[in-house]
Length: 392
Image (cartoon, rainbow, N blue to C red; front, side, top):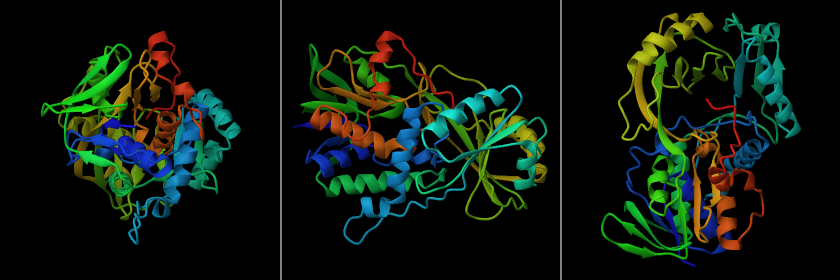
């Protein structure tokens, strides 16, 4: 079996690793930029949660959290054990009166899926987080860490490199080439053509190229609704102490979380102006912070009235415009073309489980550990959204 994976970020690397380790299939991975300078995996804020609105996303993150908790064992190479710095302070969603019913509905889905999550009244929020101004808030939802549930963040670049090294150690090959065209004959992909003029014959082709997936698959005649959407991240410092601070999502749309060093935080928000496609990546919108985030941040946490921005960067969401959910599985009308893309901001956290599922589908023809058919690509053709409501 000759498997070519287009895109060597965390999703492609995880799939290559699972194919090699669990199925003895050694993929060729084509990565357009081996430095990963603009890769979503490298520029992500790298968080993981179970507070989704669909059961399948909850299951994916539960399975991936279990993997990340054991990643030192899972991806060890000899005595080298990766450490991704996983911490689990939780996510805290705050809701206004307009959003409270959605929070309660999501809570019911999450509890049914075994997520440890607490709905907090305003009084409970104030008692637990005295540094938080609850003006305009009527309800909060906090993810708790248990043996099977947890939310927090980690070093995404370390995850990417750990998967890449482990995949190579088990027989996968990574080559720095930019895939240009899928050569196909009817419903079969025959080869991948790259920018060097190289032709790579395939028995199976997997596209995990993130925000660049749609143009590649389009060369085979199928339109994926995946576009690049920019997200700006701001690193700030403030002379404050916020005990037990989780990742906080405000009803207005911005978020913030603490870093390991006391007084250091990250924050961000959706862009003020949405382009149809943000590739190539634009520069940081510093006005988003000064004009929009900071005033709201200082209202929610008065101690943030005085702070300093120390750095900022932009990264990509591989945004699925159909329903903000991942597209996973075989592309309709093709016997050997697969996709794992369009996760709209939650791909890094779900990569271990999605990589395993894709490897099963490619090597065995069916899902074994987790059925991802609800995320199937066929819904694009049918224009039947399977919508994820909890996108940050």
